[in-house]
Length: 452
Length: 65
Image (cartoon, rainbow over the protein chains, first blue to last red):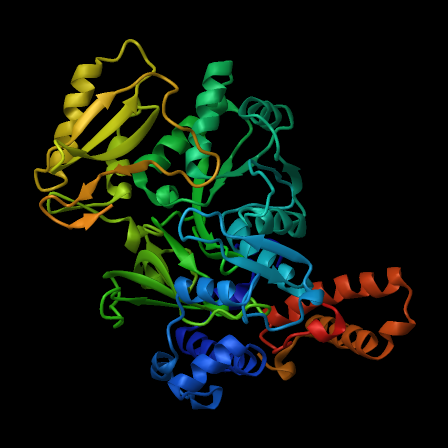
């Protein structure tokens, strides 16, 4: 069994009807636990007129109320520091974490117990094992090990698998590159942005990463791990295969991973979650192949039950047979394709940072970039992309023209400014990259009308 | 998964888990710190085995895990 391509073979190859029955059973147990232990959920379930016993089929799932980040934050503010959401006394918790703060006005604060951390690591094990990581591997974590949960669970997963773990916290990028090479790391974990940053640093140090020891990269924290152009660039610069994963602090761990067949999507760990995809406006479910918002119910996090949580992540669910790996777990094609809140309207055209990144990353000459929205002449929305091009032999003017045309053509003819900026002037990121800067005074001169 | 469909090795693991939970539930106060906390860690690891077998291990915060 140790040579199994699956971490939990029974779970990962379970026939769909058995998987449905398992999820329904676990849903009932989760709701039962939440209504008994958590005042926040008990009140909401009572208001919705539904109990665990009412959940007799998957259609009954829709009787459960959605849970939003705003409700969670409001509960925290009313009863700090956690809100009435804990299912167990805080004395039984062993760890505190909080959201990274890229969205929302206050961070979400979470607690977990000892067995919850076994589960958190277990979810990462599905991903690492599924991408071919084995006990003989040496795994380097380019991660700051703070209160953001990030790769904490992945670290424990690798220890559980039996890998040699190199915790690369509190190090400069140069020191990280040096350690990866000196200690012959075979697997590197980081955000996609930071994988590129380390590759840049390696090049400046004269280190040939592409012919180095690293065979696999496990990416997380940003959608870019599934943007084909970004992924291709990372794989080329590292001479290694890269896999996308995605998780969230609200769950404590990942809920999807890319297997070593690299199907262009991420398998959902369905024995541990119900993942619904809905129209973000109407709340109605959307079918396979259509983009919608992820809504997650977790069976694993006992300390803070998460039931029908609206993630604001945009995804496209496709059936399991889209991948040839033998798993029966459905996939999200292209991973997380964006955020409901990410979309910007510029002169009537929808702009998604991910779509812009996918075009910019087609041009390896661009080292770093930023999307800049501003108000021109006090009335007009403008969008420009700032790029850093370190190679002096590149015809920058031609590159800017090509990029401007490609961006415009992909956005209904919208005019994009593309400017070259001084090397090192754009911010670099270790965790979640924030490459869109919106400085508009009045957004939507021909579209959205909102005083900023 | 039901207990009837477990292999002998899986059955042993589930039995270990159940025995550990019983020890923690009934004798926690009698254990030295090193016994109690190491038993709790072992229980947490085996909880995940039982959970992965879909045998409803439930929540065990009451025994400190």
